[in-house]
Image 1 (cartoon, rainbow, N blue to C red):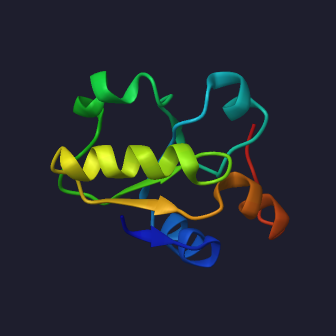
Image 2 (image 1 turned 30 degrees about the horizontal axis):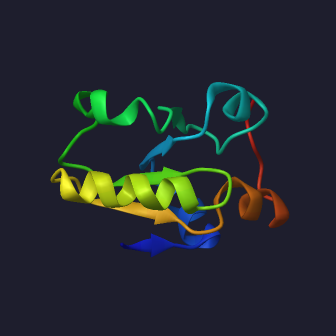
Image 3 (image 1 turned 60 degrees about the horizontal axis):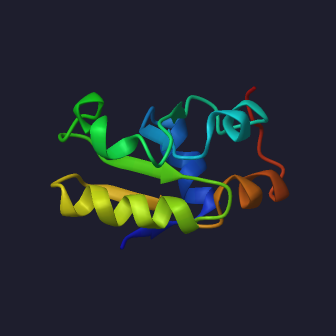
Length: 100
């Protein structure tokens, strides 16, 4: 599984990269990376048609565990996917902004 750190994730966000947040809707509503789209882990297998196989998909959750599993799933499904190591918890600890 490929991973990027918070600084790399911030750089990718600035470029307009695709980010999906696989947490549950209530977790997502509490604060998420700017521009990240919420597709909960349990829904992702049925919603891959919403993703562009021509673009790298950056996957994030609270800590990197759920997103790691979903990164492996997406990679196995033919996507170029990377996990955001440390997730939104690391993002917030680093002082990065979130959206609600």
